[in-house]
Length: 121
Image (cartoon, rainbow, N blue to C red; front, side):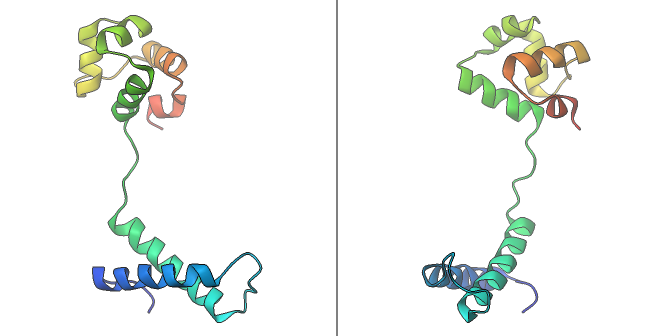
C-alpha cells in the first residue's frame, strides 16, 4: 500500500497503529518489524489525515475572536483597547474591512498576535 485510499483503509490503519503503539518504545531497534510497521502506517495515516481532515490556517478574524475570548473582551472594550470605534471593530470582525497598518500594529502589540498574522503573510 502506497497510499490510504478510503475511510475503511484509514480506520483499519488507525486501529493497527493503536495495536502497535504498546509494542514499540524508545528502546525498540529500528530493525524491529513492529517498529517498521508502525512508522510506515503512521506516515500513511498522517498523509491521509492531512489531505482529508486538514483544519487550515486560522484567519486574523479567528485569532482576534480567540484573543477576545481569552482576555474577556467585548467588541466595545476591544475598540477602546486598540483606539478605534466599536463599529470599526464590528467591520473587522465581519470581514467588511481590514485594519490599517497603524491599527494592525496596535492589535499585534495589545493582543499579542504575531505581526505576520496581522499582515497576512
